[in-house]
Image (tube, rainbow, N blue to C red; front, side, top):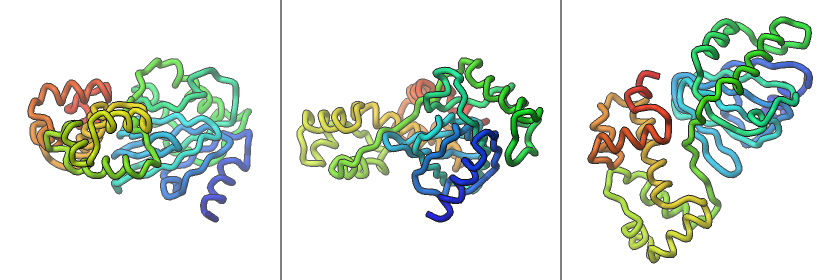
Amino acid sequence: MEILSQIIHIVDQNPDSILVMRQQTEQRLPAHQHNKAQLLLVYGGIAYLQTDEKDFYIPSNHYIWIPKNYRHNLMFNTQDLFIINIYFPEESAGNFYEELGIYPVSKLLAEMLSFSEKWQGDYYKGSWEYEFLNTLKGVLSKENLKKFSIQLPTTDDQRLNTIIDSFRNRLNENLSLAMIAQQSGMSVRSLTRLFQHKLHITFVQYLKMLRIIKAMELINDTDFNMTEIAYEIGYSNIAAFSNNFYLLTNMRPTEFKTK
């Protein structure tokens, strides 16, 4: 808790500054919030951002915009991850900045980040660095990029979490609602209601997202080809795998591999 207090103090101690921090310790902290909005950029792996309602997945070369005072906790499972955080003081800037969202890093944003790659610490109004970073922030809402949409809802319902854990590591099987219901000692109708009431999505939607998340991890962490990855997550049809991957990530699996 002492480290948590120190980090929040660093972020909020100069309320009018734009703060740049690189590969800092936020990923080791419990859920927290700060008075500045946060632009968190991810390179070299997949980061996991937990909030009170959902788990968000941020692949390499993507960023997440976190509004001010939004409780969150960042985690990752790779040593190759590199993170850039830019914290912005509150300014009236429009709806884009009031919502949490994950987006790809565009060529323009990548160029701006490359230009400022050695910047670290607080920057204040009146400095050209502050104006540059403020312009960078303004670019985000102007690009009209499609949100990266993989976000798993969470629940504190222990029975449902036990059911999910029972098939989380069996994604290569031909899983169905009827099978999981039977193995859980429930009727299909009761399990359907449990998913909809506690997670607000269907079993099929949840399973589809879980499989694509696993595919991203396999693409990032193994040398499997796309056919092998499709099989590992329960797809016998490579085209169906590719299409579902695209619907949820706005990329084909082969494009994701090059990120």
